[in-house]
Image 1 (tube, helix red, strand yellow):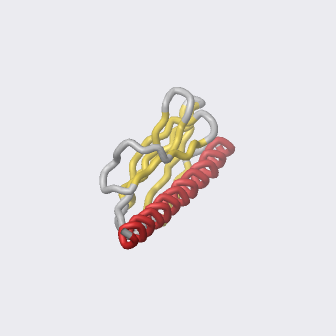
Image 2 (cartoon, one colour; image 1 turned 120 degrees about the vertical axis):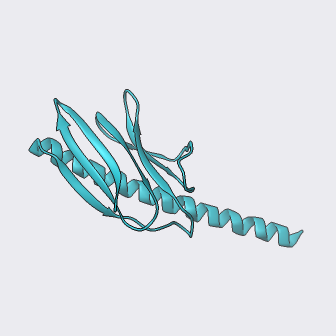
Image 3 (cartoon, rainbow, N blue to C red; image 1 turned 90 degrees about the vertical axis):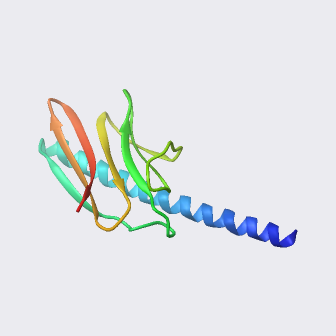
Length: 128
C-alpha cells in the first residue's frame, strides 16, 4: 500500500510540472502576442515574430492555438498530439481576431499580426 501511495504521489508531481511548463509557454506566447499587437497598432503595419519553441514538454507532445469569441481572444494548449478541449487559457487583452495552431516538433512558431479596417488580426502558424 505504501508503494502505491508513493507511485501515485510521484505521478501527481510529474503532472503538476508538465502543466506548469505548458502554462509558462502559453504565458510567453501571450506576452509576445501583446507586444506584436502593440507594434502593429502603433505603426499601422503588419508585424511578424518568429518564436523558438521546445520540441516537447517533459517528453510529451503539445499543441497551442489561438481562439476567440465575440468579446475575448486567448491562447490555449494541451499535452497531446492533437487539439482537444482545455481549461488552460491565457487571455490576450483588447479586441483581437485570433486564430491559428502550432503542434510541437522541431522548428519555430510564427506570429503574424496585421490591422485591417480597424480590426487587429493575430495568427499563429508553424514555420518549417
